[in-house]
Image (tube, rainbow, N blue to C red; front, side, top):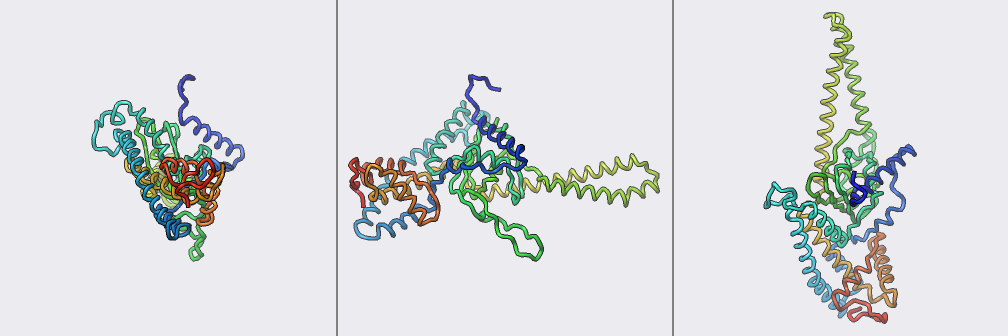
Length: 408
């Protein structure tokens, strides 16, 4: 155990949350439930449109023609010229930090842990810088109560179940965007109850469009990976050190099959051996027990191998990027999200006057997104206004509450 003067482990609070959720399940004799109100900590700010789609939508609805259209297109061009150098520098900075510890690198000394001295400190700097980039890319860090629920609950439709020993990790973070509740895209249809019956409808599940895993296993390098269409109950499938386990119902079915096979073998072979060869009952039972145990071990081993193969396939199908390529993908996404926020703020800001311009801007954009997309999204108005002010011109409110110079 660490001393009282040392810094607390990043995993200490997550371990406490998992222990509390497990204790509540034992007291209530029911599986843990999704913590009430955890969505208040997870406010989805991701607009599920590309920057080109959003720009076309804004042009069609608010800037159809004339000087308004020309001013909006000029602002979009100026925005690209202003944001691209900033995110290019950020990408180079992250690349320089992560390059020496990237497991996909083909340079450096493989005998030095982390690729260079001070690998642990470098990993902490990478995680801190990456957290800021993820926030700008509109990823939200999942609260520990939701992670604890996901690590303890298995969905009955998930064929693969995974157990994770949290003690093997120094840090685990899940960042997600695009929370949805509905049928899981690209999921296999649920099995039919009867051979010729209609297939049941796909169940509604809580899932995320994208999930980024930032993990530091003990004695290993930093793990960075991104996945798509991940249910809340399947977060443990994304961890590299997860171990497949056989579900209780499958174990019971295998044990019943082995018992039936052992009884059949004893009745058809054992009784004949006892009568014809005068084999003692003790020796016969020991021999049959050894045969059944060997067959059971092979059956469980085949089941684990099939589950491990399915887990690898699931990770491959859901994986979008990892290691160094994830850093580049996140930088591009952060620039796209910054562009979309600035375009929305520039369009709706002229409608918001007075001292409460920021609150009104947020309400106006959220209402429009709910009307156009049908999603209760949160709009980071403060960050969008800060970006507009950084441009030093069009679209920013003045202290007197008058329209900005470049307003509509």
